[in-house]
Image (cartoon, rainbow, N blue to C red; front, side):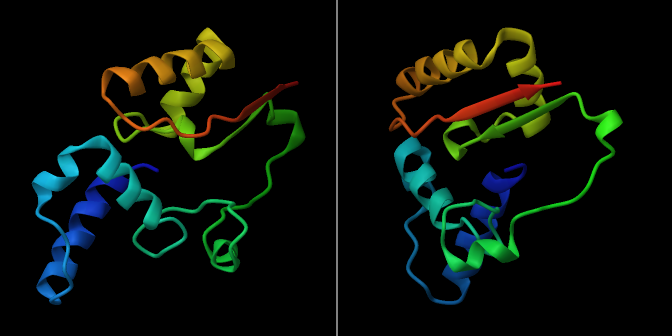
Length: 128
């Protein structure tokens, strides 16, 4: 979800210019409002890809091949594991360093501290 916060701000500004009602930016200072808007951008050109079962997801899910000799780990996570300030490669390194359970626990604590609505946290780490 790298850059999603910046894309969300840009989309809101563009929508306001087009005459679409979007609350003032101060509304999005609250974590719940920011997260709800971000979720609304899932599987859209301005947003990010999420395997959430809707038809549009097919256009936004990345896929590719990697030589199995180079593969060391596979990390599959739900979007509740992300935060605007932390990029996926940083999350991956943290999970490898402290473990998936501790990462989720830290994430839950951060949500409480920032008064964010808890999101689902699902993760699978496969190491070869």
